[in-house]
Amino acid sequence: MSFLDSYHISIVSKYFETIEDFIHLEFVCQLYKETMSKFHYNPITITQKTIKLFPNLETLHIWNKSDENFGNEILLHVEPEEDNQDTSDDYCFQNCDSVSDITVPPSVTSLGENCFRECPHLSSITLSSNVQTIGHQCFDECDSLISITMPHIINVINLRCYFGTKILNGFNVPTSVTEINNKPLTSKSDMTSFIIPENITSLGYKCFFTSEFITSVVIPNTVKSICNFCFTRCSNLVEINIPQSVTLLGDSCFRQCHKLSSVTMPTDISVLNKHCFFDCQSLKRIQIPNGVTSIGMYCFCDCSNLSDISLNENLLSIDKLCFSGCTNLSKITIPSKVKSLGISCFQECSNLSVVNMSSTVTSLGDYCFSECNNLKEILLPSSVTSIGEYCFPPNTVIDHNK
Image (cartoon, rainbow, N blue to C red; front, side):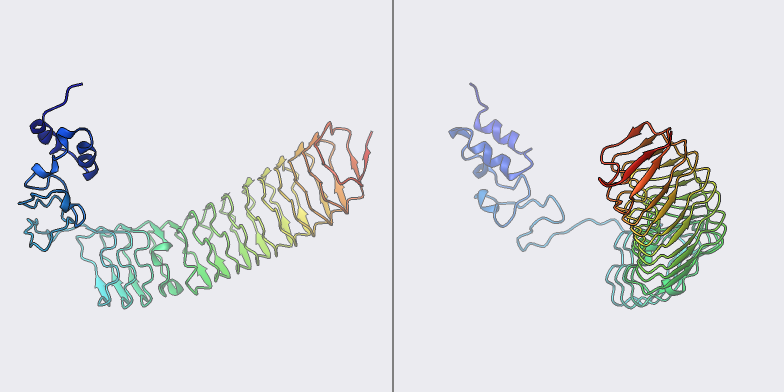
């Protein structure tokens, strides 16, 4: 096997990128053992620990601004900043204790993420009419912020920008805004109510997610969609009136709203998506609007106080675990267009004693009525041709309508 001579290998090693490359090279053969000692400058970044590997170092090369300078003064060439900067960088003014009020100049069109985060004395800010976007957590933890003047060019507001501020207690949304979203909104804020402006058409992803102090939200009839996880874990939200304009309720929309006891739903909803009212423990009654044709999985799962469910006659499908764990439910009537009941659909409905099933039902999923221990007897229509495993409790008497 042939090797490069020591001179040529030293030329090659100038292009190494890590100190490990040099160390590995010197272990290749006796010829390369003193490669690092031949350098009179450092071909790579060195530290207090690795400088001793170059014993004949005479000239220190600084390859990056962050390199160790070993006490030497370094002169850098810096391009002067221009006054017409159009963005404020991420973390630009974070932790600026001296900032109390700010006027953003007209040249700025965007505020970066965490731009004014944790400015404890910032109480007022005026944005120029040219600002179009406000970054995530822009005013996070600005405890003294009580006033903000926003331009009318912004059309989407992320309420997470104002996490931990007082401003949300009296927040005025510009009329240009059509969507409010958040990831997530002020679990630290003491805001208890929120009035959605009439220009809003969409409550975006996680808009009020984990807003544990919210007790009421007024939604105008301009809102058309309430997106995924919008009110998830609003643990003190008591009631919600969903206007007729809404046509979409997203996944997990009201999931784990433990104090939610009353819901008014619009007639044009066609689908109740999965986990929509999952674990709403205080919900006592629900009327499914006539437009709904499908109820998603886990939709009303673990609604332990739900005792009155009115299913509409246009309903086509009830997905798995839809009403599982509704322990206060005693009676259910399956509409005439429903052909199948999903897996564990009514599992653990321990007080369920009456099931009225239409003659169109053909299949019952596994564990459909499992652990419904109060269901002593059930009459199945002749249309039922498929009964899943452990569909009923062992002691339930099953009669067939011939």
